[in-house]
Image 1 (cartoon, one colour):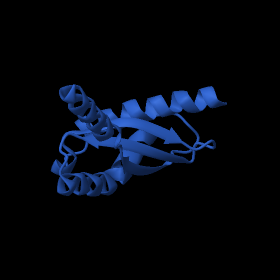
Image 2 (cartoon, one colour; image 1 turned 60 degrees about the vertical axis):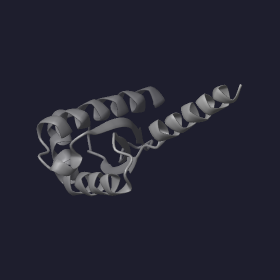
Image 3 (cartoon, one colour; image 1 turned 30 degrees about the vertical axis):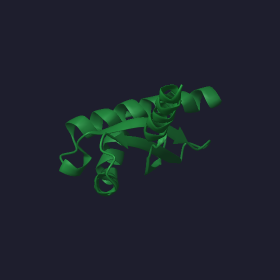
Image 4 (cartoon, helix red, strand yellow; image 1 turned 45 degrees about the horizontal axis):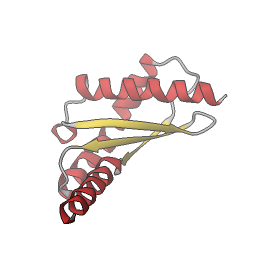
Length: 115
């Protein structure tokens, strides 16, 4: 069963990225990249993680608002593209892993500069 969930997560990630590029016209979601999807075991809920190039809190809030606003369109498009019994409820969350990785790189650079 886990293997099926993983395949559905990959498919949802690929399709949501494509939908954001081609169908969503909201300027708030420009530059948003889907970095991962975490689905519940019954495939009824999907947490979709996104990243944005800007580190400004205001830009992240705008992107979050744009994604929340477009979630109905995204879900409708997913229903047309993915053949599963019920399309999951979508929840968009910011992925902090990129920012965390940059922070770790900065700490390593500082440590190497001290030597």
